[in-house]
Length: 222
Image (spheres, rainbow, N blue to C red):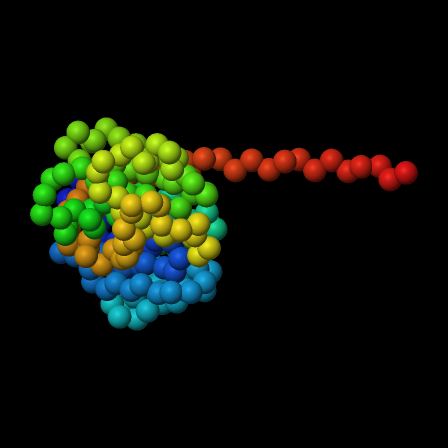
């Protein structure tokens, strides 16, 4: 985890873990600019950064720190973000610092901003039909990690459930869950987000499962 006071500002944040793009520039007291765009990640990511730079009169060379969402979420979106991040950091003088966070952690912080109690709750996101990525929040869940939960296992959980859609063609909201808007604007002035950041050497993708492809073996025609 990161001590917020050790971060070098300004900091460029980009999140492509869900459909569309969330991006912002953080200063010591919160957002200097923030934008959420819908549409195809490959074009909207660069459009979002272009808008942020125009609003703040900054250039990519001015950033000493970058932060991105490593997942779980859209593998393609996160991969595009990672490639762009490698390009942006190469343009910065010196060696900029790269930080990362996870989407379900950020979503949980959004829920905590609105809740008036400390009861446990669950954040879920798309994985595949009848199974989801999950992270539990509550007084006794500090050591929990993001993992996979099945529909059968989920049916036995008593706490409130919230869901963030991370695929355009989502299998749907899990049973008993409430769909929430994954919008990071409210977290800009929250120290919890900065404290959750983890420094990394290079951008990577976090997944709860590994996709395995069956090897194609050509058949000889007779």
